[in-house]
Length: 139
View 1 (cartoon, rainbow, N blue to C red):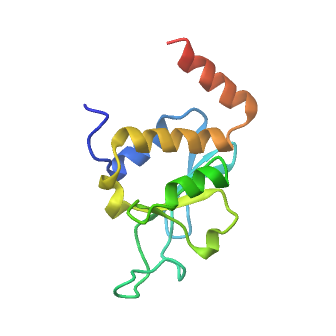
View 2 (view 1 turned 90 degrees about the horizontal axis):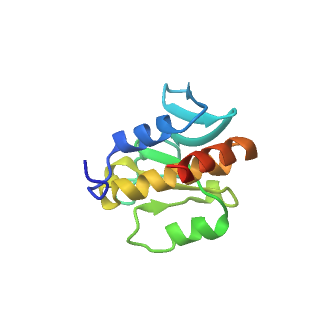
View 3 (view 1 turned 90 degrees about the vertical axis):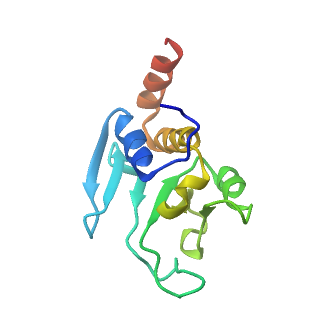
């Protein structure tokens, strides 16, 4: 299977589940929340008033929240208006980006895997992150 095909929602789930020490919690509306060490790194968000369709005003029902390393990484992902990644004022100062599931195909599978892995790394303990990195370099 090519890493460079357009990304799908299943790729987000697969990438998150493939990381070590991951648990999947259920959010308030049974939405999956991927955690490492009790810290969320990817979650499927409930419709909220801060994320609405610009044409209809309806709350977006397909928003995925993905943690990032820092504000610089966040800005690199959201500054391009053509990018499928965005943020809202609710996430000001929060190290995460948002993406609609319906726009994932605007990225590649490899990009989504890399982003989810980086999200995991940003939330995992130092020892877990190091063990994962060591395992990757020994391949």
